[in-house]
Structure formats: C-alpha cells, structure tokens
Image (cartoon, rainbow, N blue to C red; front, top):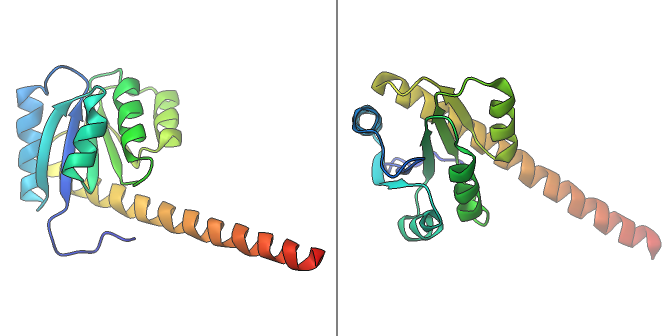
Length: 157
C-alpha cells in the first residue's frame, strides 16, 4: 500500500548504542520534524525493538548505527516481518559489501555519513518510494505465482 496519506508518517529511530548520540539525534529529529514526520520514539537496539514496533506501529523505521548495524537490523527485520515497512539505515560504514547485505536484508535506504537535517527529507522520500515499488513488485509476483498454481491445477484436471 503506497504511503500517500496526508497524515504525518510515524517514525521510530533505533540506535546501535545504549542511546543515540545527542548531536545526531538533534539533527535527525529536527530534520524529520521539518519534513513533516512524527517521531514516535528513539530507542536503543535490542530485543525490546520488537515490542516497541508492535506498540508504536511506526510507518518507517530508521536505524542509526556507527558501524555495526547488523544486530539492530536483525531486531528491526524480525519486528517488521509480518507488517513490512521502509527501513532507513544511517551509518558511518562505507563498505559497499555491507551496503549490499543491508539492502538484501530489507533496508530501503543505506546512507553513509548523511545524517544532516537537510538531507533527511529527500532520503526518507526515496526510501519510501523504493519500498512502495518493491512491495508492488512482491504483490505482483505473488499474484503471478497464484495464477500459475491455478493454471497447473486446471491443466492437471
């Protein structure tokens, strides 16, 4: 379902440490609020991410990670497996192999050293658009698979 609603999208920020760096947090939260997003929480990564996603029902999840984002992403992916949503990863890790693994795991946008307030809105818009396109393709693929299965059933009859 495309994210075209006029209501502010709810955003949950997950950080890789016990707390988000205040300087980064200020830029990110400011950038999100300036872009019209509603920040519903800023939480550290961990098993409680699953409960937080269930309780807060964010439209988008942002992961802020200095370098080792894998654990945070794993928790976010588990939390969103039944209700997929765009995941944006802000990191300092410029390793292209890591970027590929993040995208393969479900990240809609992998942003290196780009947590400036003025960059937040365009990054979010691209991530949401990419997510919506991917969800449309997944739905089309599922419909095609169902039609093929129906056709096989009819052919066997």
